Structure formats: structure tokens, C-alpha cells
Length: 135
Image (cartoon, rainbow, N blue to C red):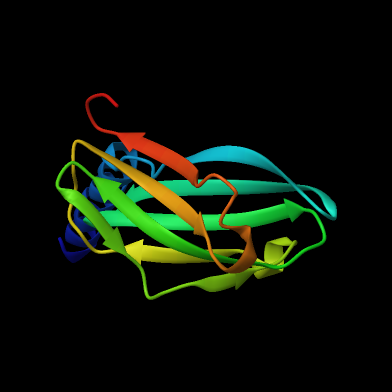
């Protein structure tokens, strides 16, 4: 009888784990790619937003280029905007990618906006959108 109980419990636990893994939604990162022309040539950036853990994760990576830039994350949503912990430097390469989590709850839509600081204020902000209903 004990052997049957262990086997039954094992089968039930396996079924529960499989059910959870099949029904858990995948986390999708939405990215927009931007090419910026600067004095050193072209820089290619990925600006991404992920809706996760009752908020939004902002991600920035400079794929190509030669300069280091001073930039700043902001999250724009239907009720206004939220800033991060201030400007930071971004340089080319995956190892230099930066992210910031905005613990704001979810909105119908949200935009990660990257502002240029220092001497690059003439560049347009870089945006990446995520929408629950429509943008």
C-alpha cells in the first residue's frame, strides 16, 4: 500500500508541475532598434521594455559605435511618468548593457524613454512601447 501511495503522489506532483509550466505565460521583451549618427559615425542601440513582476523592466544596449554616452531611463504611462535613479553611462558591447526595473504596477500602455544627457541633448529620445490594449 505504501508503494502505491508514493507512486500516486509522484504522478500527481508531476501533473501539477507540467500544468504550471504549460500555463505560465512567457515573458516577452519588446525592443526597438535605433541608429544614431554622431561625430564618430553610427551607433546602433536596442531600447527594450518587458512587462514583468507587477512593473516594467527597461533595457538599453549599444550594439555598435565608439562613443560612451550619458543617458537616462524614464517610464511614460497614462498617468504621467516615472524616472529612474538618474543618468548613467552606456558604452558599446553586451557587457555594458544596462537595465532598470520600474515597480509601478501595470498600465494599459507604457513607454521606456531614453533621454540623452550631457552634450547630446540634440538627439531625439529613444522609445520602446508595450501595450496591453492599444498604443
